Amino acid sequence: MAFDSFSEFVHMGGYGLYVWSSFFLTFLVIAGVALETSVQRRRLQKESLKVQRRKQRLARRTQQASAEE
Amino acid sequence: MWRWLHPYAKPEATYRLVDKLLPWFAGLTLISLLVGMVWGLAFAPADYQQGDSYRIIYIHVPAAIFSMGAYFGMAICGAIALIWQIKTAEWALPAIAPVGAAMTAIALFTGAIWGKPMWGTWWVWDARLTSELILLFLYIGVMALYAAFDDARTGAKAASILAIVGVVNLPIIHYSVEWWNTLHQGATITKFERPSIATSMLWPLLISLLGFMLLTATLVLMRYKNQLLKHELNRPWAQAELALDSRESAEETR
Image 1: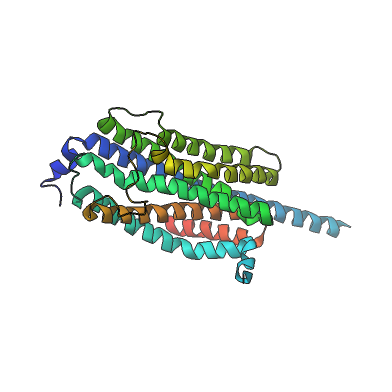
Image 2: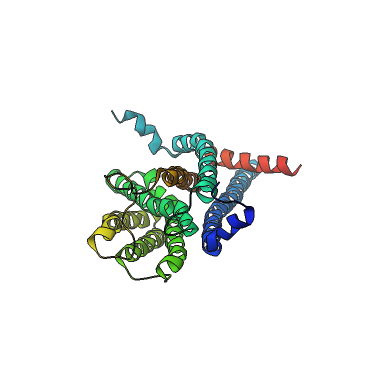
């Protein structure tokens, strides 16, 4: 351990604000990228459902049309 | 010789491979980052000149190195896309660019935060800092070009060309500290002589480097999966894959 107590660890020899803010901002940026990626995936999921429903509707309509004939 | 590569021009085969690799990458990322950060922050000794402020090195250097590594990977994908016209290579560009841009941004602001107490300034227009800022603009340019055309493939080609041309910036960033008189210090580990850092500080740095490499790969693979699904949304395999998602989330809420 390079520090004798937890408060010293937080203090970082007077550079606490610099060290912790850079670690926190880094975490924020990475979390942002990861979050955006999972939102993208959820959007694709909804899009896929829409595509499938459209296909089903089309299939039903062509079936009805051929039955009426 | 390259036969084994051929199936991966098919999006579904690529997706299956990425899907299989991803949990390993994610798990190893978590472990190596945790070990590297805790070791670097709490166990590595303080620097005799910079005190504890130097601990920013454990994110600054890895982020800077892989902001360049990701760019190189993106340029290779661009070259493959242009030469062999492989669509799955084109789709790697929008998967890599945002992750690389994030790494570049991290390198820039952690550098600024480190620069304030050590140099007395957040920013100077010196060669290293300016060329790294240009790297950020290159990433943004690649993303913008990719999305700028009605025809997605034209956009991918334009973005690939920019990505390849931009590679000139990489040696400029690396050698900027030697070619010009800069405020930024010289290389510590990426040189041929013995690294000029004590081993007690070097080990956590190497583990952090591994962690950031895996983190970059994990994020890129996650985004690449999305790209593959996006372009194959009309195919049954992609629909089945996405349907699996909603079933899982339904089970979670139950």
